[in-house]
Image 1 (cartoon, rainbow, N blue to C red):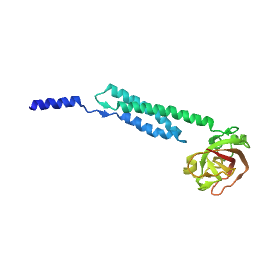
Image 2 (cartoon, rainbow, N blue to C red; image 1 turned 45 degrees about the horizontal axis):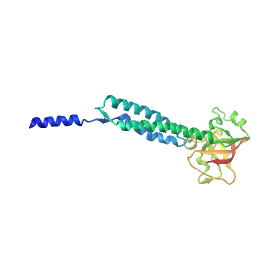
Image 3 (cartoon, rainbow, N blue to C red; image 1 turned 120 degrees about the vertical axis):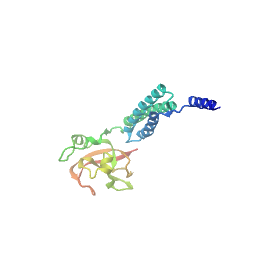
Image 4 (tube, one colour; image 1 turned 180 degrees about the horizontal axis):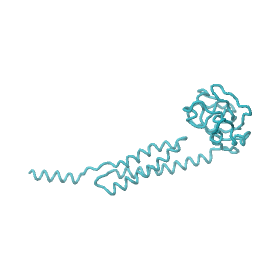
Amino acid sequence: MATDLQMSSSADEVDFPYRALSRSAITSTLLFVVALLGLIPPFEVLLALAVLGVVFALLSIRSIRRYPDEFSGLGLAKFAMAANALLLIGGIGMHTYVYLTEVPPGHIRVPFYKLKFDADPDRPTETAFEIDGKDVFIKGYIHPSSGGGMLRQFVLVGDLGTCCFGGQPKSSEMVEVTLTGGQTIEGGMTRRKLAGKFSLNRVPKKQADFDNAVFYRLKGTKVN
């Protein structure tokens, strides 16, 4: 009788062996979840995590097939690989389409870094002189010192660090924006798209609540 019980126990161990869920499959799935944030501007860089997700999924599939008695989670690994690959392709395609179509006709795209002068003393950049009086398209963040609620006039800065965590921005890091046509925009930490006529202050203009004068102005409208 004891022999029969031992044989039955041994058979159960063979028929139902314990297999650990692949950690690489779990990691790949978690990377996919975080990489989803890359679909939201300005967090596009998080889409790069989907590449790591594909790598971890492939490692998981390889390990499970090589050691089928030790690891489980093949279905999860395959799902994570497909999800990360589709997210990467779809996300890049979406952001590329937005980039190619977001600038209004007749406007020049101006990255904020081309307005920032990196040396001291601070002064307008060559790009600022080149686009003076021209219609431009620019993206940035409303500085909290501009106030809250619905705004018609505010100061735009180039990144969240300057906006909310970088203290007082330099003169070449700010654009004084005045919306036309009765438009207003709500203050906050959302990246804004603006289009309008750019002008260079020949005499830097002092703004309330800012330590440094403003070199640049924009009169125009919000985009989206």
